Image 1 (spheres, rainbow, N blue to C red):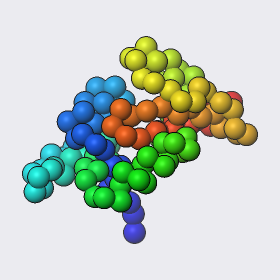
Image 2 (cartoon, helix red, strand yellow):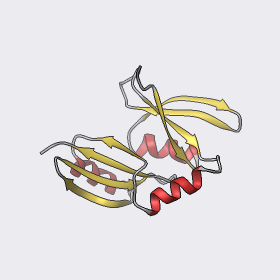
Image 3 (tube, rainbow, N blue to C red):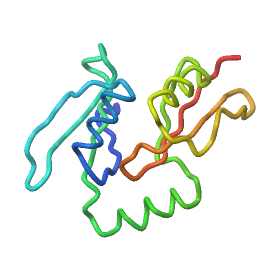
Length: 129
């Protein structure tokens, strides 16, 4: 058994696709009509068989209270690995990304948290010393 697709709820699929590709650097994998929305995924460039992130429409009534509670409490929806949190933090700041937590050492890792502009907080983490 292996993970093939994982999802994140987004309040605007077009805006999410722009942010996740142009700003974060993922590449679009799939874009298939699915009712009133799309099966829209992104992945790590060059990892054609890697895990895909589904930019899932946040239309279900349970999604808004769930994601709003996470944001209100400062809890990231998911976490992405980076080689250097400090370097990625500066790169994203230069692109206008809003951070809720600057790079912070937490034991053996460093983390930072930002808004993905479509309803979520995202954590980046490294294990570099």
